Image (cartoon, rainbow, N blue to C red):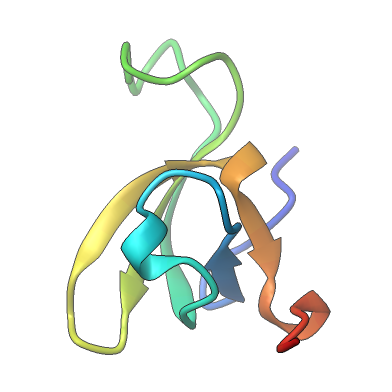
Length: 75
């Protein structure tokens, strides 16, 4: 079961992948739970998401590197 769903607002955690995008609003545009069907050998086991930023850039990110936008701390 995935933590996030399509159209959820998320951000990449600081000190994680894509540090230049940390704490930047992104939308979930892809959810890959079935790792037997969708192979992402560069990621550990778990759900992979495609997230898209406001500038149109999209990246694949492991669930452990994402947080809900509403839970962010601006400080």
